[in-house]
Amino acid sequence: MMKIWAKVLTDHRIMNETVREFSSARPSDMEEWSVLLHELCQDLDLCRPVILKKHVNDLKQFSRVVFKPADFIESVDFDEFEIEVIPEKKKKSTNPYSFA
Image 1 (cartoon, rainbow, N blue to C red):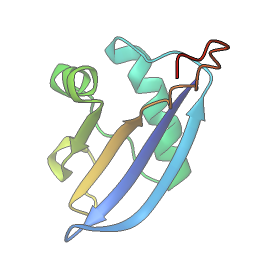
Image 2: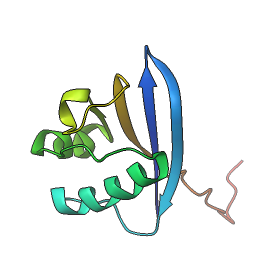
Image 3: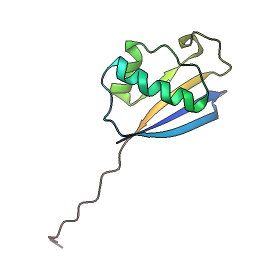
Image 4: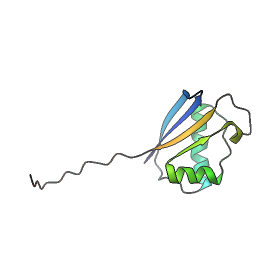
């Protein structure tokens, strides 16, 4: 499972956002990210930005990417479209052994 937080920002303020959970593992290439990006953009009623190798590398390295208006073919009325992978919380291990 993977959760992604997508948000649209104008003047550093969140104008629209969505959190979506995907049953797939974290994508590793441009095509797989493109499919998830399409679904996120549909949720926010946005046109899909052009995804470049730089964007995929940012997602791999930082679990976050920011799309600027120049990354969209159509004109947009916001400053940034940001996607962030929400890290999974580690499950508490129930260790039956106590060394206290």
